[in-house]
Image (cartoon, rainbow over all chains, first blue to last red):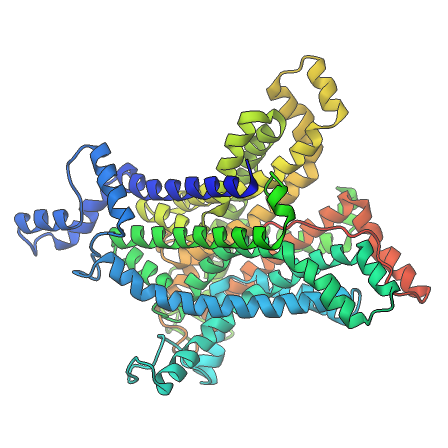
Amino acid sequence: MSYLLRRLALYAVAAWASITLAFVLPRLMPGDPQTAMFARFEGKMSPEGIAALRDTFGFSDAPLAAQYLTYLGNVATGDLGVSASHFPARVGDVIGAGLVWTLWLTGVAVVLAYAIGTALGVLVAWQRGGWLDAIAPPLLALVGAFPFFWLAMLLLLLFGFTLGWAPVRHAHAAGVEPGWTLAFAWSVVTHAALPALTIVVATVGSWLLDMRNTMIGVLGEDYVTLAHAKGLAPRRVMLRYAARNALLPNITSFGMALGFVLSGSLLTEMVFSYPGLGYLLIGAVRSLDYPLIQGLFLTITLAVLGANLLVDLVYVWLDPRARVRTEAP
Amino acid sequence: MIALWRHRRARLGLGILGAFAVLAVVGPWLVGDPTAPVARPLSPPSWAHWLGTTGQGQDVLAQTICGARTSLAIGFVVGISQVAIGAVIGACAGVLRGWVDDVLSLLINVFLIMPGLPLMVIIAAYLPTGATTIALVLIVTGWAWSARVIRAQALAIAGKDFVAAARVAGEGRARIVLVEVLPNMTSLLVSACIGATIYAIGAEVALEFLGLGDVAAVTWGTNLYWATNDSALLTGAWWTFVPTGACVALVGFALALVNGAIDEVGNPRLRAEPVFEAAVRRAGRRGAVSTPVLREELP
């Protein structure tokens, strides 16, 4: 079986496992999530009203297999039910609104962190044993030891409340009308500044160490020595010969790290009340909004799986060796 | 063990860990009830209360010290359990090969590829809140990282002659896994344990920060949960969350130090590297590098 087929099978199994997990969990748990959810309406609503609500949320007394099939059909058509805390909004619409903000914030932060970290990693590996190599890796490792959201709290306090340099919550100012205007764009960018900075600071260290390690491996290769021997300028050897080849294995870790970075950015959103998926998730957990929790779990998991698949495809396209190798790297 | 103690950085790391362990065991008796209100809410550090008070007037120092017990306990229990599960599954996959390996590898990869936090949240949201739930969730979601590393090592060891000899001698599969293969990667297992513990402490704090733990208990995670809930940030009350975060980082840092030291003690090449490079520099040469040693890190 070719490398790509194996990977595809893996993603299919992972996707099926997470979709099934979201179905099985609520039905396995001790206590009854439905009752817990509807307990809040008890006394305020007639039993008929609650029964109608149960129907709306897709709870039924049908046999499990039938429920499972209905559920699979709903997921396939993107129908995730009705949110309890944003009632009567559909879960899909609530998530869609949050997804835009998470994609924007995490996307910008990940690209920035990757670019900065990789560039620093190239430099650090090139001047191995130099002052940058002595300072940067341990310092960034220390920063990485702090909890992600704790850094967010610190930056929020320091730059947001004490110095007042950047807005402290939400994705844009309340007075600015969303639209394709300069004022709105500026508001969005300034509001993303602190959360993005948090993600960059917390993750840049791992990119740096990653790149440094692969780069040091590549620097030991014969073709680098040959490039030196040919008398090529050191800059050219560093960038065109060593860094270019070291980037390849780095791409796989990009996919692996995505889930981790996303988890951190979800927590960061909470600290800054940034209206993305993380903020929705915590709201859903606190108000016991099970349909929304499930929907968010599915969206985030499937998004990460999709991103990983994309990274794999890019990798196979970039590196011909991956096309013949059968074992995953 | 003695070699580890000779290592300067390992001694520092073990010292920090020891201090925290003592604090976790005897601390709660020294500071009294951490949940009792003792002074005006959100008062800054003073002589009476070294680290100030929380939004509910509780002593931050007492909360930080008492929080260490649960957080560290969960961290170590989860770290060890993750590696125990990872060792059995990883070693079986590596030794037995064939369809067993295919199935187990698929299982490992599926768990690796699913993003951790949403998975933890959805499981924790349905279980009754408490320390046991948090520990269970972390074990279920985290074991695959160690399993992957251990499987790779088991594959390498299973190819060695002494394992083939054991097979010919008629040893059972279970005996080969438990007696021949696993003891030969002790340093890897210890290092995986430490990595898993670092991960577990961070994840435990994150889950409780989300409010998925028992918010009435005093742990590092709930300390941070209350710090945000009582709008400590709005009033600039840095003392409510800085000490806890610093403790988490310090424990993680100490564990990383010990981990690095174990690596160097167990891997002579890594130990020789700085010596070799210093010699190259003394000779006035540059560009020469010893064979690189790559460390695979557990996230």
